[in-house]
Length: 195
Image (cartoon, rainbow, N blue to C red; front, side, top):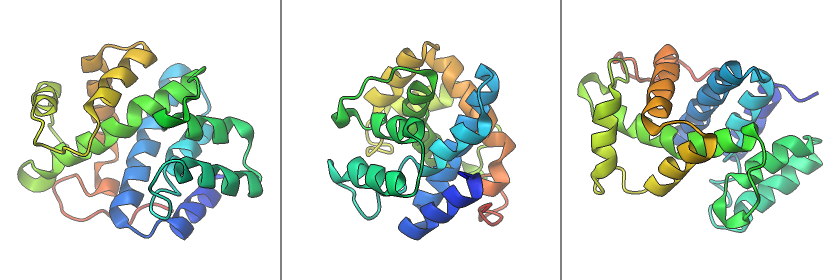
């Protein structure tokens, strides 16, 4: 049985970096929020969010990421739907994002990282009160969070079929609801990343 708990354990086994674990949590939050919006299974979509980069710390280069991770997931009995969605979020795999799950993961991955980076430079390191227009301004600043692929953010919203501002606003709101778990509520460190 694939559960959020077993997915989190697998993430912890392969990912020791706290920041990568927080990224997985942020993407999970966004995936669950979109699952709710689209009437999809939040558990399934959340597991995809948790595991989308679980192999990245050990295998950061393509094609090892995501192909090694795909093999691990297959050996662990994960369904093809999850493995395919995770594989499709890496552009170099050239896999068609042929359903809402794949499109949403791609649309949320880079944006989650960018929103967390933007929150961390705000007073109090908080996502509370963050506005879409300030995020759009930071997107234009190529020196800010330069490791985040802006084209993936723009292309992700386009593939998902949503306006970029609408997508950013939706994601900010979803992360605000779980700000304490991410350590982005202005109170300091994360309140124990939920297992």
